[in-house]
Length: 295
Image 1 (cartoon, rainbow, N blue to C red):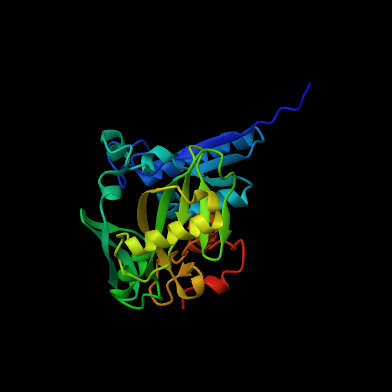
Image 2: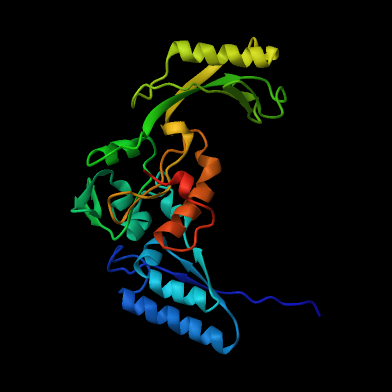
């Protein structure tokens, strides 16, 4: 007989008292704690450790509980449903039943009392929080500079052009200097990208699009007849030296920063999120945070 592995897991939802009355979850944190400890006790009787998949709001509210469970040999993982965060696809009642209007509201300012953050001011009202993470991309510096240094976080515009090539013309990503080409299966090719200090202006310019198209045709001469189909622009969160800021604010208690990933957000996001989670929850960090600490 082959070996059988048994994994016991539990999803730990936030309290409906602090999220939304229609959301799934315990009616208060005390009820949630009793459920978690009861489940862990049953598993212990059978000699099985548990993996507790914890919602971000839950781990912040009950950090001591889950530290205790980790010391007892249980595991803690992140519990998230991607559809809940897919705002553009799920904007109806099901989405709002879990998050109310919070995810639809822009954070406009942080509320600081003395040397501690109390939460965020949003378009739908004040949201209190014991810990606040600023990860607002290119807009992070604007939020922070309202009460102190912006740490050099600024928007850096990047324009991209889409050329209509033929299928199979380019099989892999190629790049030279600051330019790169990314093929699509239908033959279209993304040509990127510019690096411009233009504030929060996300418009495209004819000069930049012509430059991108010329660079693409220089890299792949077969694109000489390929027309530019469209172009768009986005804002990167630039930072001094291109190094992200990860860690606690140097003078505001409870405030943590995670902006400034510049052109490498997709690559750095998993590691920076894990490191910041360690710092927020006061766990031994997975790597030395010193090079990334806000100063």
